[in-house]
Image (cartoon, rainbow, N blue to C red; front, side):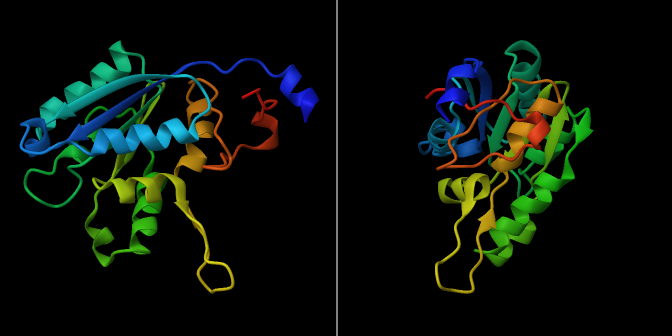
Length: 208
């Protein structure tokens, strides 16, 4: 183990965009909880130095698309996570705004996010969350509630001595996806989220 640490290269900084989409929070009607929840979970899970880009914007399709383009094309984010605006209501347009800026669609993320949430609420089938690639960045729509954000990203452990199995979170697949599209090598804290990579894609573990 010590040899792996000694041989490992320092971790590259990773630019991460976090976007909260909400008419009322952006207008100051109530405090936004989405951005703090995203940053809190990511700070615990990601071992790389993080350069943050945050946006709090209303439920407007063009504004959301413009923000995503700006985060990827100008700010150089390799990963962008959004929260809010993914339901069936008239003002929920985050998926449309996300798909409008995509170069590739990654449907497996949306499928797994809904599957995770179905373990807790039957209304998870109303969620329209999507994930896409734009150039060398991965963009993922997440739920709006802090508890659901953590469950979706990190999963839920199984209950010992019961029939309830663990539920896998989506973030375990994120670092390898970012590898494949040309982004930085993201290392995670396995106590929070154990990232999966094929053996051929793994690097020596870096020092903490």
